[in-house]
Length: 443
Image 1 (tube, rainbow, N blue to C red):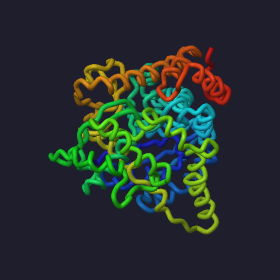
Image 2: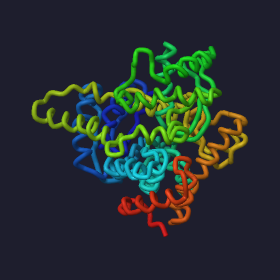
Image 3: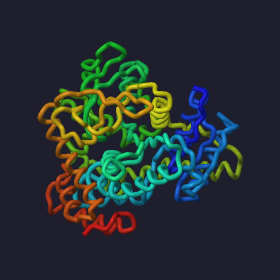
Image 4: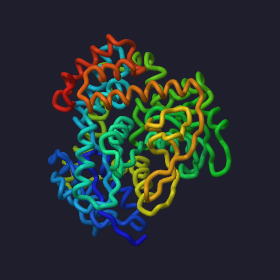
């Protein structure tokens, strides 16, 4: 493992970037970088985050070359790995994604429901641009490891628009849940072997083993009483806000109703949507929490550091988010065949779902990409739920590709969080106005 790599972080101005860089440099002895590049279209924001990234490098690998750029050629030339974490429209657009649906008593969430469809329409073509830059400039064997949300829609769109791209779509939510499971079961996260099926942000754990021991029923008994909240409330900063605690706690209500499988926490938006809306503050959503919390803290920290030279970096070293993307990249780099939950074309892995569904299942990650496990058939309730959501995601991709208002309306109407076509049309029309700068034109 003596090879060195040139790595690009797309969305270099993200507040998660310092934590990802810390996770990368924690592995510098086995996953050595020769050059790290941050790429963003917002120079001022990236320059500020870059101050913290430079501090991380000074702390953990002072010889590493850091490049901050807004130029695609400089960013992607000869790059081996590209970590994509774009947020198109930043938190201003996330706020609208959340608040517009809530006006109509519909779930307001950044990746689920109409907010997720809106976010998807903003992200599809910027991701195409990233792939095209990689094809033009990057190493022949480049890998894009994509965190950009909504990952299910992005993954489905890229398979249609750039089917030969070397891109692997991942999500840290199952890993974050597994981190809490490990705390509950008093074991290491890496010792958990999950069986899982679904779409991104729309799935279920069917079995949890620790090593060779099946601990599913033990875990279910706990989750039915406490949700995914660990007994000593251990949790990383990212998922320690009140809204996240409520989300982890809500898993108990889902499992009590449907006890066969342990749910992904995002299932609350589809199965408990009316309660989610009732508990929401329509004037102060999760986007406001983030803008007033993590976003504010990191840029204040940069200003203070520039004035005083003093900074506590610990709050920016979030754990599982950075750890997971680095673990996946290392398995790609060194053909480790590590087992991870990632998104792939179904192609019979779930026998009674369409082959072209973009499913999230356990895969072995090789240097040639993911090798899916075989899930078999799934029960009718879960199959029906997934087919409805998958059709919704397929229609929103078709709406983007074809510029079709009708297909966008179909996608919004089909989404389980929206009660009727009339409400779907009201939300869609308002979102078209809000997203004029970002969406493809719909006619």
